[in-house]
Image (tube, rainbow, N blue to C red; front, side, top):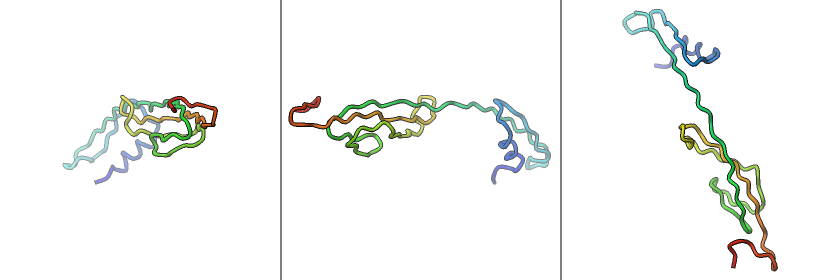
Length: 107
């Protein structure tokens, strides 16, 4: 059984932190049903992953980047401590190796 049309109507109105709605004759026994909404909206969390690499870098999205990038994003579903999604933005600087340029961590 899906959500009754009357409840769908509630969702179309502005959302309050609590609301009560009576569905006349909505119970299985024909009595009225009283529906109470207790709503808490938690915000998503976002952050920036700043990285520097030589030549290329493979990020959490599985892509290997060979050029600097500050627009890639990745959503970690349910990754925030409040259970909401986390949105991570990559801030990547790629240093290309040249004959006389030594990247950090290279031999």
